[in-house]
Length: 514
Image 1: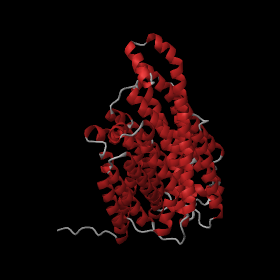
Image 2 (image 1 turned 45 degrees about the vertical axis):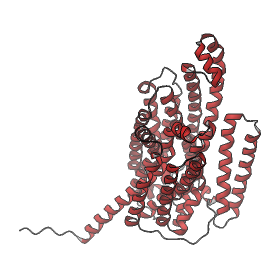
Image 3 (image 1 turned 90 degrees about the horizontal axis):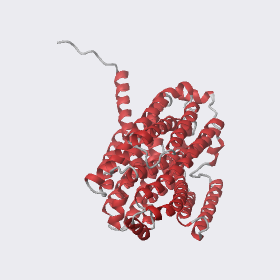
Image 4 (image 1 turned 60 degrees about the vertical axis):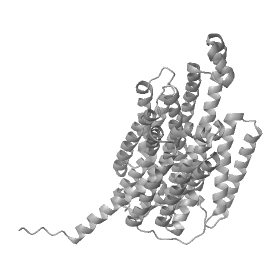
């Protein structure tokens, strides 16, 4: 009997380490997918939730906002908790809090219970998401290995929105809206268990929590978003609109003052002294507004104008996830050779081109002829950018501030998405209202008696008249979204400067660091 060839001890250790890191990345990416997916999965279920829990049309928007605002507002504090208390420990805690809140959301019997559960979900995500990104920096060696890990993380982060739309359509159409929350429970429990088995605890750093900074930043962003949403409904001169903007200015000014005085702020302002990092945060703010707007308004268009079912609408967005993953993989492979700036500039230009193309949609457009092409161009641009943005945000950061840096990147994504969507909704509402006013005289002449009666009862133009109003608003919103991506391209072109040391770190030949 032949004696098997011995395997060197080094080879065995290397293979085991590689296998363990692969499992660790799968666990981290699964958590990020669950958290990001929940931002969009509820969109398909909103009509069913409204009927089941008696939401008004205005209050229904807070089913989304309660999650995204809490998530974005507490991300900075969430990143800090991992630095101080241990990243694995807080990662598991955040996942389990998210699971508990999901269970409460699925069991909610009224609107108040559901909104409270959504806010608690956001808090759990705010702890789990930044610590998951920070765990990559402590689990994977700097250079090609970490580049690949960030590529997977960025692809999951960017593509989770489209997967959420598909999953939401399937769960709502085949089961019930409550399953969009229940499905998180077994997945989250499995992630928490696997984390304790395959991911090692990070070094804990002494410090304290900047609760005042977290509170003022969160409330300030909530007030700012509420101001834009209120303006879309009641106008810019409305008293509550002005009060919301005034409160936002005061709270955010207080936040900056607190951060300047704090010895251990949740947002070390010195991070913005680095030109590349400040530019990266600015780009993420603009690009998140564009991608949130693209999903939101295309979902309205394909379901209301193209008459797609929930599952059909979800399937329509699957190419977005695939192309983003391709773009992220391409960028992660070529970054060490060319550096991040070419991908930032090219990606932003492609995204702007896709959104500009979408402004041409009208009531006669089709999915294959008018939606799919620009959507793919937009998605490729986003995929090229997200890996570069993630790497630039944490490159060169001291290990004790890795959680704060990653938390700030995630916060700018969520805040940019919430603020940007509220601005785009304002543009949409204004354009829709103007289009409706232009169509009313013609409608009153050409409409059937039944259509005129329906208009008097609801105040909304029915049938193809309503489709024209919606399409005009969507097209105007895409114009504003394209402007956001042009701003991102200008930031990449004028602000980002890649140094030789940055390229050395990407190639794994420079001095060690985060």
